[in-house]
Image 1 (cartoon, rainbow, N blue to C red):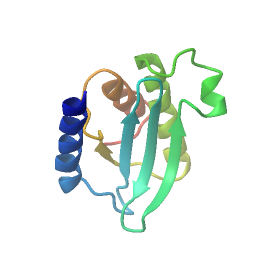
Image 2 (image 1 turned 90 degrees about the vertical axis):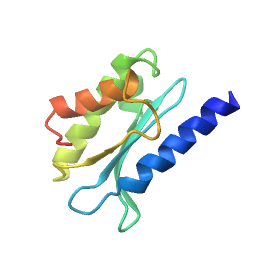
Image 3 (image 1 turned 120 degrees about the vertical axis):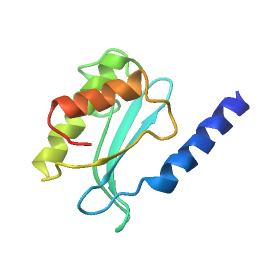
Image 4 (image 1 turned 45 degrees about the vertical axis):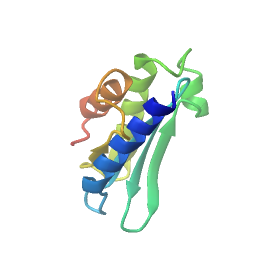
Length: 119
């Protein structure tokens, strides 16, 4: 278990070395736990979180039965895209957080792209 966590952390550092959010293209950061999914849009220059959505939010908790599946991840992607577009953010840089681009992370990204977020 520790080796898996350490490998994800190494991948995360490798990704973050090249991915940085700017005011023009903030960073869409994804975190997944076993039970929930989290996404936030961050401006790394100012160090400010612009938009954040998770399966723990009251509006999302009512819509999903389980926060740790691909359906919940796709919903989080659509909600983060809607909030970004409402705040005038159209282009982002995708930070998968060291996770493989597969399963829930891929579902979140596709949900955000379907709603019009560009990355």
